[in-house]
Amino acid sequence: ATSARAQAAAFDFEPIGIATDHSIQVPSGHSWKTLVRFGDPLFSEAADAYSNETAVPAAMSDKVFGENTDGMEFFEIDGKTVITVNSEYANPEINLPAANEGTPKNADEVMLLKNIQGVTIMEVADTGNGYEVVVDSPFNRRITHETQMTMDGPAAGSALVRTNADPEGMSPKGTMNNCGSGKTLWGTYLTCEENFNGYFGTTTEKEPTDGEKRYGIGGQSRYAYEVYDERFDISKEPNEPHRHGWVTEIDPSDASSVPVKHTALGRFKHENAEMVQAADGRIVVYMGDDERGEFIYRYVSNATWAAGQPTEGLLSEGTLYVAKFNDDMTGEWLALTPETTGMSLEDLLVFSRLAGSKVGATTMDRPEWIAANPMKVEAYCALTNNSKRGGDKMPTNAANPRETNNYGQIVRWRPEGEDHAADTFTWDLYVMAGNPKVYQNEYAGSPNVTEGNMFNSPDGMAFDSKGMLWIQTDGEDSNEGEFEGQGNNQMLVGNPETGEIARFLTAPKGAEVTGLCWSGDGKVAFVGIQHPGGSWPDGAGLPRSSIIAVWRDDGQAIG
Ligand code: FEO
Ligand code: CA
Ligand code: CA
Ligand code: CA
Image 1 (cartoon, rainbow, N blue to C red):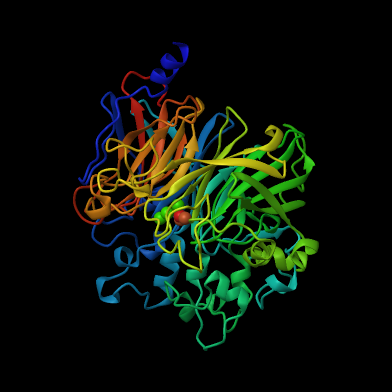
Image 2: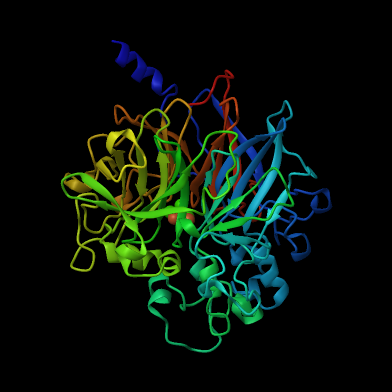
């Protein structure tokens, strides 16, 4: 009886149906409003910068909230509240004149695109009318593709990361394609560099190296940066791409702090970075590499840590591992070292994907966010989908069991001995997304998927303080064919114990839901709405990626 009551109490809301509209839907008894929209001012000089016809002028582009909100974290610093949030990419069609057809035509337009991506750090305050951005707060800061950074760990300063502009290989500029996030146990922000390859091009044809091929460097660049800035031209600066694809740490308490790229955590298309502690106090970071057939990684520090102790070396001295999911539902973390890979330490960190292949890591269906359960020693990874799974090139395996996997699944692992530093684990699939309306076979999904809660393409994930798993989707929202009955992208809540999943929020059509954090008292959830369609949220003019606040009307904690 107790467990039935606990289960009933676990979802303290009435699940909602799908939506196909251009707005946000939340359960009855809940409300929402926008916290901040792309182009809203962080500084009063940018108060009138945004226009709903032409977006943001270049001169104000690093003084406003960035575009395409993604991972975010909530901090309480000296009695103030601060949210750090990624701006993953820019929409040239929204931000450049229509005649440009999506390509910058001069250096000013390139600068505009560089400035509206990266990271925003902003103080927020509950004004009595809900949370609002504190304009001109000394915490407010934009970190862009030009912000000066430093590097640490074994690959910092190595020949692979030296450029003409930085012959020491210690002073990279910019963090780009900031997708998921993480929070360190000592109160700093981790921003994760995902599809960095798309920013590099070449003005002179060259044969790609194995490393460039595996990371997709040398294809068409997305924003033509290389035409106006040699840093992004791989025929002139072949090592510049090696300075991106890292986990970067930012101290949100000091707007003059220099962000640090941690090479010990490996270079790949980082989704997020979920930090936990091993039984003995060592720091463990779980990380996904979001590309079809890429891997899940784990970093374990050499040193142990406890609150109040120095943090020096915790993210620069340690071992990187890659996951092998065996078909018998056991698994292993395979260390990436010079001995196991035959590569130098610098090489195996800069080209982690090549190292992972050498040791026999399991190819996964696009590892997106990883979330660790605060109530027990286990972690979950959203495997968003993989249209290319199947056949000889990427055969199915037990953790990625469906060919042409358009729905995705969430894999969960439990470390041996309840210790995140253990080198073995057991695993299962928490949910196989699917469509029981269209299919009666494995594409219908696992038993915890019903016509009432179905979804595709799980991506963002985070646990709340009560131990519920929140799941955000970035999928196909046509509501047709294979996706009939799934509606717009959405946010659901999963009970890790019972497997029960309930729909909590639906996004405006066209948008994905990504990024989630809570106010310190758990009463407000901040949710990111990326690439909305229509004219959301203003109702007229250009669409604006935004963060919304969601709360319960009765003032209780949300969830
Ligand atoms: Fe930027 Fe893998 O999502
Ligand atoms: Ca994502
Ligand atoms: Ca996305
Ligand atoms: Ca995604």
